[in-house]
Image 1 (cartoon, rainbow, N blue to C red):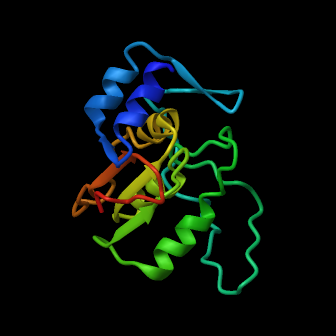
Image 2 (cartoon, rainbow, N blue to C red):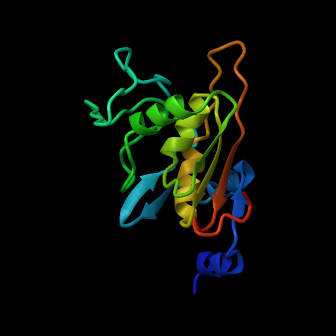
Length: 168
């Protein structure tokens, strides 16, 4: 049993992974392996744009189609099973307002949390894979304040099982 498995067994309930935990983690790791795919940890992002293309509009039907995957902010398509940031953006804009809370109990690489941060929503993300939590923390590691009245949202990440959300 490796150290991650021992820690996981010890913390069967949710354990918050903070920015400090992430910074300690990246001292020794440049990347993680998620299902045989190497995912690099960037530490310092070179963000070109924080929003989708100018011609983006909210979906208004039940059939959604996006011309591309979406690659603004820290979104990347290199994580297995991740989804287009257009999807959480549409849902967050449709069903919440600034300051509301968004939960992603299987956050993977953090696409929903990145969108929540950009749209000024507080968010909680949970994943059973510690490496995935660190990838999400990496992708949340940017400052965004294009508006004078921007208030940095609260973003919490947890290592835990979606079937036991005991910290929420």
